[in-house]
Length: 125
Image (cartoon, rainbow, N blue to C red; front, side, top):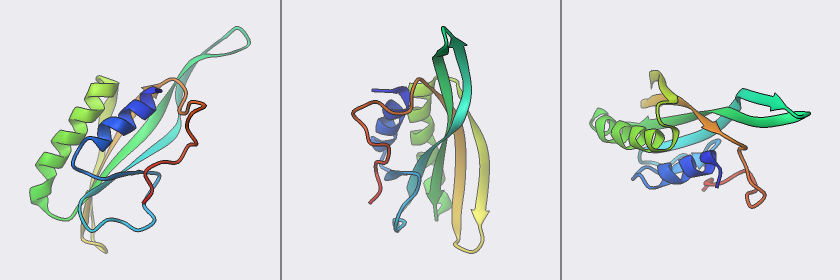
């Protein structure tokens, strides 16, 4: 399993449903999205990439402030367990149109995003 797949699996152990890239229909309850964004850094040599890291966004959406503390704790525990200290809280927002709060973290995952056993898109319900 790649570090990205391990992070995705760790987020799936929280009580928050997660999808990769987005939801076709967003859940009525709290929910999350995980998105591999771009290459953050790489080590080149021997006519190719020897190692690389990817920026990954983890987004948490919730409607009630009472959901914030438990959701943040569960997500940050999952991220820290996989990425160590290679993450940061990127933004906190309130989306007036939808009445949904939104917290975003950006972390770095080492290695390839996908292995030969994966197809690239998981978790879309």
